[in-house]
Length: 435
Figure 1 (cartoon, rainbow, N blue to C red):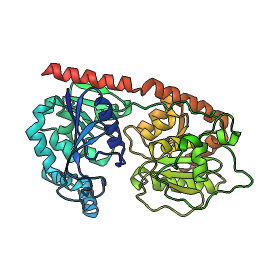
Figure 2 (figure 1 turned 90 degrees about the vertical axis):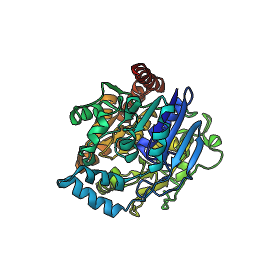
Figure 3 (figure 1 turned 90 degrees about the horizontal axis):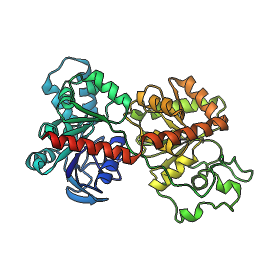
Figure 4 (figure 1 turned 135 degrees about the vertical axis):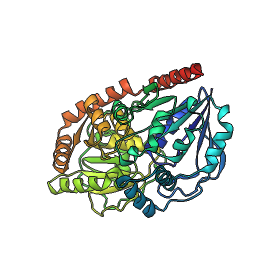
């Protein structure tokens, strides 16, 4: 089959949960299908500035067709328009203007799809929110699948999105929590619906045993500089300790800890470092934890989109390679998931897959679902719950070990790629047979 994915941004350099998920699914389906991705030239979702060259490219076995954005976003003007749209009476034309200002606005992508949609057996749209999905779904809805990545936010209540959730041949959800939310929000939906989830690769067995991380050595102290480490040093395989090495070199995550001069308990966040992802609240809550005697270091990996306080207990690790990201997840004592808006949270699933417990924002139904179903993490509703939960997780080695084992089992049972891809294949067959 020939399949087209339509998404607002695409590329290894793009940070974003739905974009990353789309890339994972596209790359795996490319092993058995002819896969194209139709997307913008943007890397940055704030301005949608054209950064990738326009035209076709080949990325990990996938043909990527990029189309220029016609306008960049004025974020201040857009925020003012959003405030009006969300809170005062308005017309459909107002909502379409909001959609255009939100971006990415790619007339070339929509025109390409109008002219060439018949060459594709299936069109898969990722994320309900953006113009390529809203406009693209009108072209061939009978061959379209929407992976909505929906969650409770003001925009989803706009009238234009009722058609988005009604028109496609099939709707795909990442979690049962997302599915329940959409069922309430949009009574008119396609007959075909499936909770497909996402696949998570369990890491291969490491050459060191999973023993607790070492305490601060007497002759070493923590670094006060939080440099932007974007790539691992050379010979990381050689750095990985063998069973003949001293115990402090065989500890979980020892390679990452040594490289970044991290000692003692470590709390890790990964993704866009952005107020919208709950990072301001996270830093505030973590500061209160430190004031109450907490001795952990908060390490943030990813793209920094906000200022960070210059405190010795906060470290910025920068954007990491896939290998070093895995090392960081293993090095962490706890992985914190502070976003109140999640339709899946790959960060949570990746942490659970390596046996690291999570501490999650209770305002996200999806994150609470992961914690409850896996028994691999705790969740907090306010500052006091954050502080007390983190203290408990840091000091209780046995609790962390039990939660870690539960997390691995949860990912193995519910988030295997073979199960996920078989669900997509069944949807493809049903759409093909319906035609």
